[in-house]
Image (cartoon, rainbow, N blue to C red; front, side, top):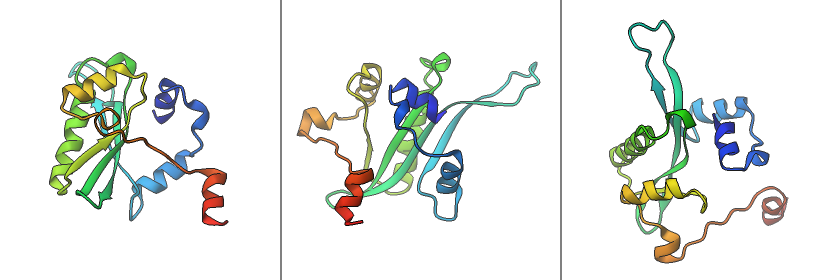
Length: 151
């Protein structure tokens, strides 16, 4: 499903992680991330197993101004299941986890062209920090990160 999300975001060429690394990083003794899955249960007349139709991948971070944070790295619902409130349920569950863990903020990012997601997040009460405070998101990776670290 992560590859489906990358394709939807028009960023398939950026996927470099293996399934083995995802499993090791999320299901080891000290996981780097946590994941919620949305499943569709079969009706009593169906003999099939429940199947995953969406997920939310999150991790914890820290703000020196606000304390504990939760960051929703990915949220994805398969196209044929969108518009049924599944994404909203995932977001609400992440908020519940955040509060249970004493987090003061729930953060996420969205691509500027994804107007449906932006509208959803705003309708749920999220504040657009680029609009409100002028924050921009940066990253170091690959050669830039090695140069920065002197390696």
